[in-house]
Length: 461
Image (cartoon, rainbow, N blue to C red; front, top):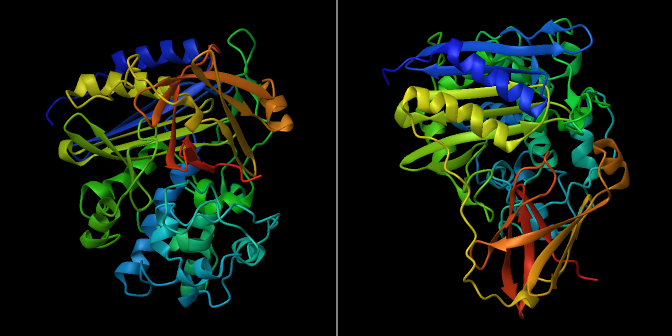
């Protein structure tokens, strides 16, 4: 690409969007033709009014999974672990409730979220043995779905198991593995994997936006528990996120010339994919630590992240030799990210983010096939037909609802895109339109509901 970003113009637009969404700050990085442009808008802490800068450290949330997958693929490239070897090869005591899953689940299943093991890891504590303890705690964990049957995002467990494999092979704790294998070789000084390593003077304060009329509230949870480390606890800056993204644009090589991983490993991470049942919001396919979007004719590799009060987005466009990241201390909001990124993409003459599909009012569906309760720990959705229309009720955990300032039951009309996919618009000005898949029909009834990357089976009782 030859176009360059007009930073002043872009900053002005992002300042408008921050005001519209009540998000205190955002830091943006653009890696274009080997050159990083980064800037920040807003305040990192509303109490002190200290401005956000390009050195402000934000929580990356689930974007962490790219980092963990990249380090794990080093072990693969070194011949120390096989993507399709059973986890028990490396963790002989590994066991879950299903005997076949215990002996057959592989790192590839964990990386692409097709293992189906419920996140039933209890409280593993905050100690250095947290991932070892998580593996021990899931000995009775049931399956959300059969091994490899469908995609169902694992927020913490799958990548914690990968981290434990890394600990056993490298003989050191996961946090140290990440520093030695990625942070130091990449030359990163502001990126860390554990809250105690974060320079608090540089850290952004997270905020909840519960209303456009009231002031943002400081997040009641400053950091996620350590159990989420390999799947959600990396903290970084836009420039350092893009230093990692450079590895994907350059066949495994860092900006400093260091080879981080083999070109073959990068290709495997991008090429090994499974379909996502709900393909519209978080990508249509899931690769190894990466989600995959198709923006018009451009294939885009990505990962989103969200903690309680912060959000992160990364998009890598190999055909355009371009990567963009957004870190913010409020949200997440899908429409905010789309407006920010499309502003930049248009300026650079790159492929833009497609709009969500339109509903098809001509579809005649047998609504009874979709009705029912879809449930797993921490998630319950009730789907019912009324007056020839289909509705979904999201049943929130009362504590979660209280933190968000929402009722514990929220009902949405489902507008069909096709026989499997629906738009889920909201009357709440703080909620963007979501999408949902209801699929896998057997004996006249759908067996799974999939939204926000989570897979939820039909309740069996």
